[in-house]
Length: 462
Image 1: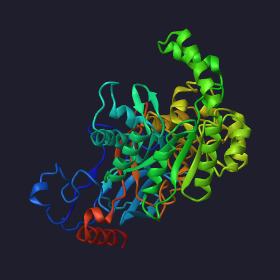
Image 2: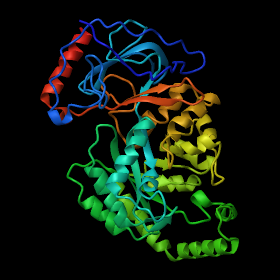
Image 3: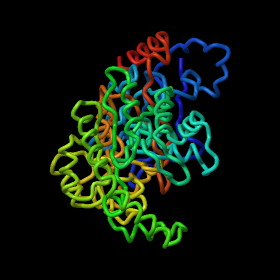
């Protein structure tokens, strides 16, 4: 019997992922088939178009083969590759262009690990697209998920601030952040692994709510990802007070009003210095106890890095100067920079260029900050400008973020790791995602599905 491959190429799209890449190969000739899986319940029978004997459009099965791709490995891009997945894990990467039957014909497109975003505040914008139009949080998360998938992201850390602050028309409060945590914790998805980046203003009053969050986590929960920040003008992201004032004036505020607001912010900073030190000590204790993996937000010099190390910090998040980034590298911290900084060609706050830091080998990961599509856009920018090669650029949004979050089960295309994968079409000026394949969960599919998939993988590998 024969079977039809799932062709990931839409319409007349061509597969020329990068300049000099080989032309798309012919579809792999199928050499095997298997009986279709049992019919779904009647209520779910109409699931859209299917291949002749493949899976319905939707979640990937737990075992399959994607063939005829340019697989982006840790140190190279290999043409004509096939990746074999069994029980949600990568079990083999076949190189050399050998004809291998596949469930998906990649048509010569790039196959990369699923992208990992360790800092995104974009859910806030989805929740409140206008200042007076706040949407139900569960709807906002479901809506935002489709945008995440389209960006090739399979693991997303939603930043939520345990402090009171108005941000672009959205009122942050510790109570709203706790609601975000509970909603994300309860959300089940076969497309994205949703997680939380806990943000904490060192001069704020949200510690009791964050402690409540920690108290209700189940026993054995891994350390939370916890970023401490202080956006007082005169240090960190806004070290240049004049530039900070100018940016707010350009946004439409009156200079006199801005200058008065900045004066009040700096006065409050002097009044809350003791609170800041108390909160820093508390967060250091969380890191020492293994309850939190600590990120220092916007470190601006070597001393800020040394202080972060002293309190048990592991990650320098968005270092604002070359001095801070170099010191982070010297003391062994993992460093995160902003993808929009790379995409724009510089910092919107007048700080160090992220691309320069990448060029000097001082960045381990890029985060989207507020623009999920910026991850892949930053990769394209770095490759186009020859800052780094493609495997190194993609590592900044895959294996690098996995190190930030201490996720050892994903981030590379290698045997034994999760089959979180993304097919990328680079036939135009900018790459776009053709398909996102996230490793399934046996609990989602049931024993019959898992058994059939194991049988299928054994047949392919024999």
